[in-house]
Image (cartoon, rainbow, N blue to C red; front, top):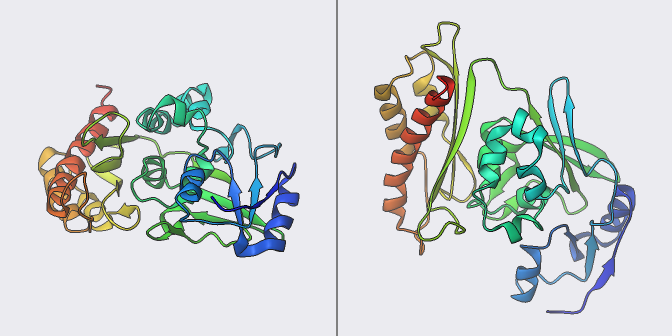
Length: 291
């Protein structure tokens, strides 16, 4: 690991000023579960490390707002997993976080760091894209909100600029008669990355039988998180039935472009994407019916 200068700002403004000063030569440290490994492997060699762990204020905590939830980016995954507010208002996130790695990792890793890392195999981005989440990012020039489904640009690449800090995750209230689930196909052990991960959200119309809206989102299925918009469009206006879900899953299979790796070949992952989309939609429907 190369030598670097260490900075420990106590406010977001101080951290933004450091990024403005050092630019591409600086890296943010939150939980460190990804960055430290990359530094040890010399895949990332920053001259300046900006540690956010002493930053207080809005980057911590969970707040119920009139239009949804605001989650501070420095909240650890374990804190959110057991948060009564998350369990009540965003249960799919708590359920998803239980599937992430080990408790030791979840006690260190932050939600903001997970989202900013840009790894398409991670679990929380998939569930949060299905929930229409946004990320709030801040720099010395101001702040902006970015829909999470446009935040990911390419493999390990986001639209986050070198001078910006991801400070908050904003999740809007779900529509009535909606339910969201996340399913993860594991290749070997419970703490592994997914072979394929799928989040599905179903919203039924007032009759409780037809699909008024849908989200189908996949992880480990391309160079970024994949939102299967064609599969979603298949469902709109249709009766929420197993036949409709099979049709949507077959369309979704054609929207993914996975890489072959030690968790499965690209063709196997496409097959499993179809299977998991169908299962996730069935699970979302079951959740709507209280079963």
